Length: 146
Ligand SMILES: [Zn+2]
Image 1: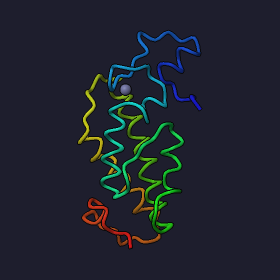
Image 2 (image 1 turned 30 degrees about the vertical axis):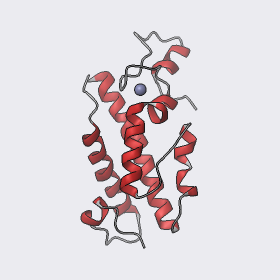
Image 3 (image 1 turned 90 degrees about the horizontal axis):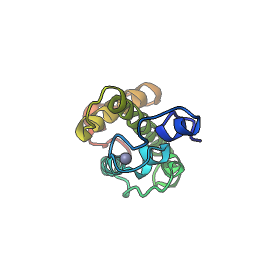
């Protein structure tokens, strides 16, 4: 809903920003749609997530496409819930990475963010799911669903 304080959202609220360019790619205006979906960095992350989760390549045109992806993927309701959790963690991680890049000037690192997403999503799922027998080995290969 454009409530996140992206550079474009801040500019609309009359807050001065030095430039409106996305800090992850440097090529396009920073909106939430861009950070989470259109940015080439985000697209690379989504492709890696799709590969890891063994789902077809993710072609998203707006944020809602990734937020509703679990509804259309095949498999059990457990798989859909897990995919949704992974997607929420990925969006959260992209926003954190964006903030680190804006405020700490750190360079975005694909492998690092993917490792963080897998670790955080593992903790979420392991602590919230009724099946607690999930091992890190199975999780890291996404090899635990019937
Ligand atoms: Zn970008």
